[in-house]
Image (cartoon, rainbow, N blue to C red; front, side, top):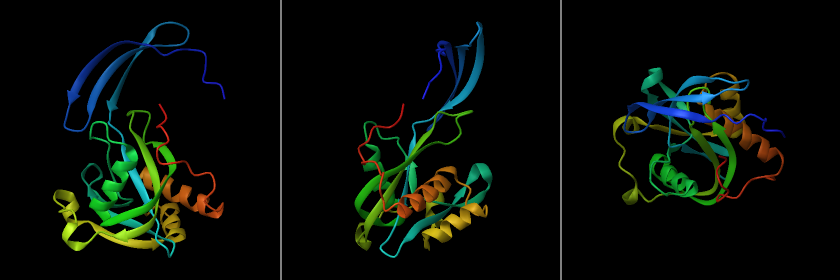
Length: 201
């Protein structure tokens, strides 16, 4: 597949805002046919998300308050790639333990999602986790802030896909992960990538 002939080169960059998680920058970028254009976007460290599927074919969903949209959303367990040098698979295992009190025996890559490439470089790697076991009660993560009122449920995978198609699940990585998991299941789990597969760049 062709990637196009023009190289979009960054002539200059100005940082507009730096926060705890992301930065907002303005780039001057060369355009096809000559000239440049200014593009504002959010630089993001990336994230992982996990379709945790139990032996009964149920997927783990969490309901969490998301302030930018002002409501609780159904999502997959997920978290930022904000630990320097941390492998995404390690981050996925950590987030599954922290948010859903689960450990995983088998991990595969389902899909990679640019969450909203018109304004951010955020890339979310969605994993498939199977062979689940409960984290012992005395070793569970203490949840705070928005995580303190997490609701955790297990829903049949096809029911979760139906929730996404009905607009009851709107988180982009969750929708992509559920659809990818259902597709992979229907193909006998063929075509899954190894957990150490490099992220697309």
